[in-house]
Structures are given as C-alpha cells and as structure tokens.
Amino acid sequence: MIDLTFEKYTECTLENLQLVDSYDVQHWTHYVVTFKGEIPEELQDPEALVIVEGDKTILQIVLREEGCDSPLFQFTENEKIQIADWFQSTVANKLQK
Image (cartoon, rainbow, N blue to C red; front, side, top):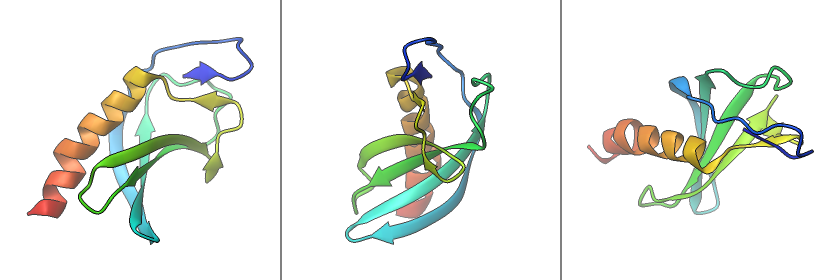
C-alpha cells in the first residue's frame, strides 16, 4: 500500500479475495472485492473496486475503505497485479462460460 502522506510504503500479499457485489455504471461494470492480508491498520473495511469494460478488460482498480475511495492509501502496482490476476482467472473466466 502506498501511504499518500508519504510516511509508509509496503507491498502486501492479498489473500482470500472474494467478489461481494457488482453493478453497472453506464457501459462499465463495477466489481467490489474484499480481501485479507498484512494491510496498514489504519485502513477500515478495505476493499477493491475493479472497473471493467463489457469484454471484461480491466480499466481501473481502486482501493476503497468503508465503501468510499481511500483518502490516505492506494494500491501499489504489484497489489493491482494480484487483484487483476485473481479477477481474470476467477471472475472473468466464470462470466464468459
């Protein structure tokens, strides 16, 4: 996680990823994913918002806490890759079948 106040930078291994919600916003689909891991204790109820196009191409992955964009942290590129890999192998593959 990248601390936007530039006090901390940690690479987290995200575990137990689970799709908990999805909804359409115009021609994109938003997927809400919960996860566990060694995350900063300041984060409250963290989750990932995965925004995809109709063909399930990922456009953006946003760190949220308590249902809103996190004001203090964001995902590192490696954390986004973990989420994207999980999403493509688990969620996108099931949706295409």
